[in-house]
Image (cartoon, rainbow, N blue to C red; front, side, top):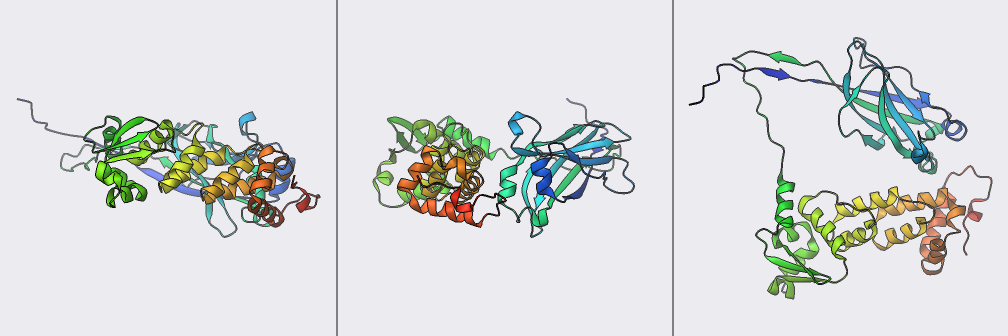
Amino acid sequence: MAAECQSWGYTEISFLEFCYSWTISNFRFFLRESSEAIKSPTFSSGASDKNQWCLKLHPNGVDEESQDYLSVYLSLLSCPKSPVWAKFHFWIINSEGEQTQGMTSLRFYMFQQHQHWGFKKFVRRDFLLSREPWLLEDNELSLRCRVTVVKDTFDIPDEGTKPEFQTPRCTLADELGELWEKSLFTDCCLVVAGQEFQAHKAILAARSAVFRAMFQHDLEERRTNRVEIHDLEPQVFEAMMGFMYTGKAPALQGMAEAVLAAADKYGLDRLKVMCEDALGRDLCVENAAQTLILADQHTAGQLKTQALHFITAHASEVSETSSWKTMVGSFPHLVAEAYSSLASAHCSSLEPPLKRLKQS
């Protein structure tokens, strides 16, 4: 028989959270003319806090990969006890005083004295300029940083005080994903390009109104429990199904456009936005017009807005591409929207705005 435990110990870890706001004036000059990083004034969580921090902003990134972005870092200048564990969240404060364009560290980082952590691709420079004065009111950039620091731990060897219960993490997504991956307890068959996939009607109906209609109404799919899917490639279908079972973002490399179309067809709004985000990150001169066409076809509003902003910022280059010429010939309403976006943008270019886009 195992011996009964006669005593126990309890270690408590607490956190300190504080915010710092930093406003930079004449930001357009800094963005266009300066290549040197700038530092914020020194700050701490309060008068009694000995840890001293600052923010660093790099206008042209920190390497070739990030040269089109602003890079933002949190730096620990001095501390009586090293190291300091902290996580952080950066935002831009818009002209309405709201926090936008936020990025959060995924974990706590260990800060030694004079060490910094942050985001080398915080926000694109051309995006900032295209959204003036919403993000650059009065030619000022306002940043806010929230820092969460791990405070000192202390032990409580009091046998009379009970420790808190530790709740295990939720594993529902993993367990539902296993049902899909191992085809456990399935009750319907989906056929894609000749391949059969076993699935669960209840999960499909709960996640997609399109599948729900198939199994709810008196259709062939309800009678046979078999669904023929003709417009998806198997790898795109598997990415969509993985999301439907787990809610997790699938690997979208090379197929974000196809998954976006599938998400739109089957009413998967969250997956649709994930695809919009992936396509928005890959925007370039060559694919901007094609991305705008895709976003319009699938009612992807956020991606469409990003594509229009990108075209506005790179009008002359985009108008030379083959996809722009295709859009001129086949999607004139999008050309009109691009013109409207360009006309309303606050550009500093000396070239007349409406001459920056070519029609052929």
